Length: 319
Image (tube, rainbow, N blue to C red; front, side, top):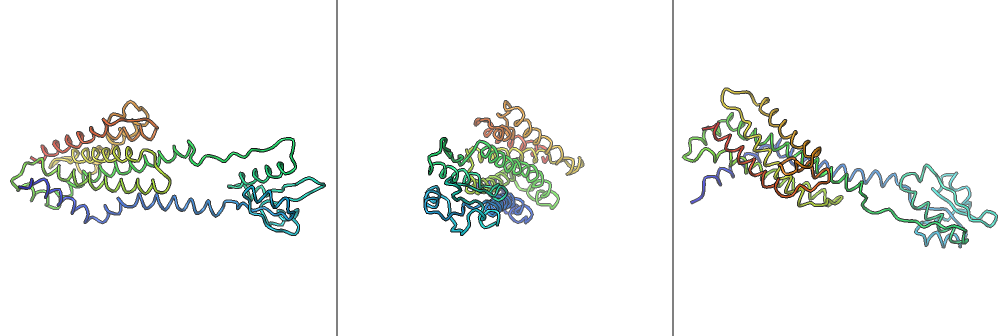
């Protein structure tokens, strides 16, 4: 015989899927993140200085081509930069190879090409000192930190979603009469908030996973599985806090309950970033992850515990 928790969870999930505003809220973080990253790449690519250099002498053309530069055949290389025909140019002056650069035109992304051009010219005449061009690493510590905080912001956003969804799932169904109808069923009271918590947890976890996968496909996310596990656990725990904050009949309104729940979750998120020792707590682990600490697995388990306690508290209010 099917446990009543299963059909009630399915029904709660269907009600969530019918709320267009909720679906848009769950999809927008991934869409906006992708658009922002792709837009940044497009703008950077459009502004980046091309690896072009004007030269006519065969010897110069040969070494510059070997250095990975795109040589432009210009009749007067010495005037190519000032005339705006090329971002850089090379020619012989009194038997010495001369390099001219458009400082403004090569400011963004052209520094490495400038160094390669100078290194090739110095090697050609065996200058007294040479340049060794070292390509920058593909991923720097600053980039890793930025990606980590981006993944953290996405996870924090879904955690705050959990508060709203958890609170609204009970309060909204009570307003529409759905909850009152369900309470007439011959099932334990705890099943009703638990069904809504499971539905909220599934929706949030799937949406967060899709957003993190998209972020990983675009720029790569270190410890992707860790972010997803702790983010999903934090969202579920936040949904439990939201469910527990549902006011009793005749109690404070929805806004006051939402403010209290958000305050609790925000304090845990900020506490984890400021004090990594709190990383054992759900939601605080996200702040610790963003700060570069390893929160371990206890916060993932405690997230389920917090959600269960929130569901039991809501059940007592409904009884």
